[in-house]
Length: 281
Image (cartoon, rainbow, N blue to C red; front, side):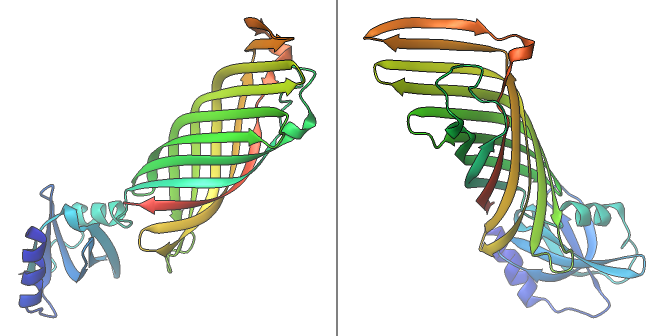
């Protein structure tokens, strides 16, 4: 109802060429500006800083009131509130979630120091991930889940990483504002699981430790609130302790913990090239 009343009021009022508008935010801040366009999800306005005119956006749900022609002179055009909102809401989208899929390469000696039946086919794998980001202008807090799966059929390997981190994004071209580049960095928990079967022999190896992950990529809007893009990912972790269980000739042997030591740690590093789609709220 409030949105409808604001839209009707803007249509009904007349605009004078020298008058400035008053935009009041939901938090009570006042912005001396010229309202250019009111859409269903945002309000576009212009203001002068120094000798230049700037355009800015603010989400519609953060607008409490708009008074056309409230100011008849530019008495506070360079106010701190105006500058703050230009920086804070230049990109009105604040939350996004994405899903990605790609191919990965295991750079570490995965499995070589764990079992003599693990083959080099584990070097290549597929990667799928999901992450969510809450942005404060260009900076964001993000969570991520990455799953790496080997392409080897006889010896299945899974690496999983779950972490929380920091993200930064900005426009590649600030004039067109079409393409965005971003960089993420995470710290979290990395898990390893290997299942190997050969004849009557079966083996399972598991382990986990603190790990790190980072992404660099770009994206562009395709329609509505959907963006598509590509990214390069690097994830790394080391295991110095694993748990092994195996069965042979229908006999099951209970899991045993194996300390690998500092010089025999398992390197879980892998590099990935992925395409993704992002939905923004």
